[in-house]
Length: 453
Ligand code: UD1
Ligand code: CA
Picture 1 (tube, rainbow, N blue to C red):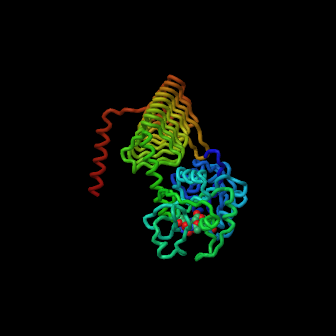
Picture 2: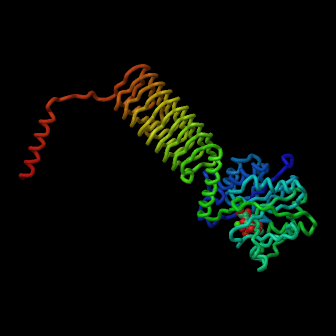
C-alpha cells in the first residue's frame, strides 16, 4: 500500500458562520493546532501527503496552517459554494495529475484518525472503486443515509431527499470518501444538481459508479472520526475528546497522572515514560519532559524543556525558552523564561528568572528577581555554577556572577561579581540600643495629647 500514490482533497471552503468569528472556522485551534492542520496530520499519517486544499475566504492563512504540517499543498479556490461535488472539482487539475488513490476529507473534522483513512485506502488497494466512510450516530437526523444491498453500497440519500423508510436507516455518511484515482474525474464530472437543495452532491458518485458496474463499498468507522465543528460549543466538545485521547495515550506510554481529566496537553507535547504529572497542569505548545521528572500541581508550561528527574511547581510557570537540566528544581511561584537552568540547580520559591543562565548546583533564594528589562531592552543575567543567591536579591542585567560566588540577602546587584567572592549590595544595618523604648514613649504621649484635644 505504501507504493500507491495518494492525493487528498481537503474541502475547506465553508463559511463557518455559526462560529460567529472573524477567524475562518478551520483555523480555530484544538490543543493549540488549527482544526485543518489536525486533518492534514491525519492525512499525512495515512500516506496521503499530497494535498489539494479547496478554500474560500481566508485562503492564505488556511494554506499556511496546512503547509506547517505537510509540504506538498496545492490550493484551489471555490468561488461559489455549490456543494461538495462542486468543491471537489475545484481541485480538478490536481486530481487529473494521476494518482492511484484520491481521498476526500472535510477540513472541519479534526478528530479523523489516520487508521480510518488507511482502512479506506486498503479497500481501494483491494479493488474497490469508491469507498464511503460510514458511521452510526446516536441521532442520524441531517446525515446522508447509506443504502446497501448485498454488501454493496448502492446510494447515499441526503436527509432532504430521503423517503421515510430511508430516514429510518442508522448507517450514515461520515462525509469522507476514497476514490480510485483512475476514473475519478469521469465519475465526478457526471454529478448534477438535480436534488432538493439544488447542490452538486459528492455523494452522487455512489449511484453513478454503480450504474457503471463499479465496485462501491462502505466501511464503518467510529463516530469521533467524523465530528464536524460548526459552533464553539462543538469546538469545546472536540477539544475534550482530543484531550481524552491524548491522556490515555500518555498513560499507556508510561506517564503517571493522578487526575488525568485535569491535565491539558498541546498538540506537540512530548513526555517520556516515568514522568509524574500531578493534577491541574496546562501545557502550551513546545514542551518536552524527560523521564523521572515530576510536575507538581497547578503548573503552566509552554515552549519549555524539562530534564531527567527535574521538578517543577507546585504553581510553577515555565515560559518559552525555559530549559531545565537534569535534577534542576523550579519550585512554587517561580517563573522561568528564556533561561538555562543547570544540573541540580535549585530555584525553590517566589522567583523570576528571565533571560539568564543558572549554573549547576546553584541555589537561588526566595524572592530573587532578574531585572532583565529596562523598558526598552532585554539583558542577560549569568549566574555561575554553585553560586548562592541570598533571598530577596535583585540582579540587574546585564550582570554576571562568577562560579561559587555568594550574594548576601536583599542585595541589589548591579556590577559583575567575580568567582569565589561575597557581594553585598544593600545598606548596612545600624543598631541604636534602647531607642525602641524611647520611641514607644514618644508615640504614646502624642496619642494621648491628640485625644485630649
Ligand atoms: C455532507 C454529506 C452527507 C454527510 C455529511 C456528514 C454531501 C452532499 N453530503 O453533508 O452525506 O452525512 O456531510 O457531515 O456531501 N464544502 C465546500 N464547498 C461546498 C460545500 C461544502 O468546501 O460548496 C465543505 C464544507 O466546508 C464542509 C464540507 O464540505 O467542510 C461538508 O459540507 P456540508 O455542506 O457541511 O455537507 P453536509 O450537508 O453536512
Ligand atoms: Ca456538515
